[in-house]
Image (cartoon, rainbow, N blue to C red; front, top):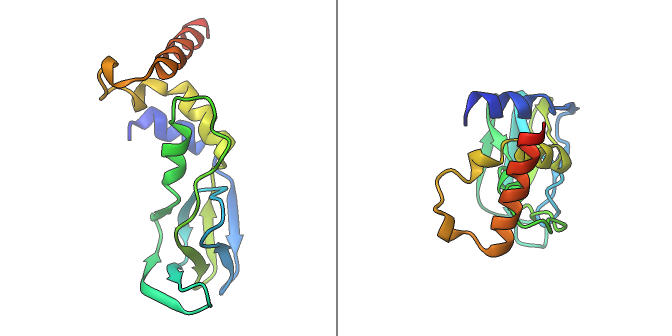
Length: 145
């Protein structure tokens, strides 16, 4: 991730504290935030729908991220981004957790400002007409600033 983009995301970080053994994000719920773990430990896991855990759980520790799908969602150039991605795992604090949480709207603002970062590796013929129109609008708005 380029430094300017990272700094722009950092401008929208909201610190949130979670007590030990607290449900943070539920499997099947809309991802309404990303989590950058600053302190503490959280665990991600899946369930069988009846409360039983299935598969392997993963620990999230200082420096780890959960909810990266929100960046892909926000970088979708088609303007209809009404449906947030769904979490495929539960996230629960193991110890007291301090996390930074950019929200979807904040990520959209950052993506709009740094639209070229998310399109630089694609050829023009890989974009649909609506995506090309959106690219043009982003380019014009960044020139006007």
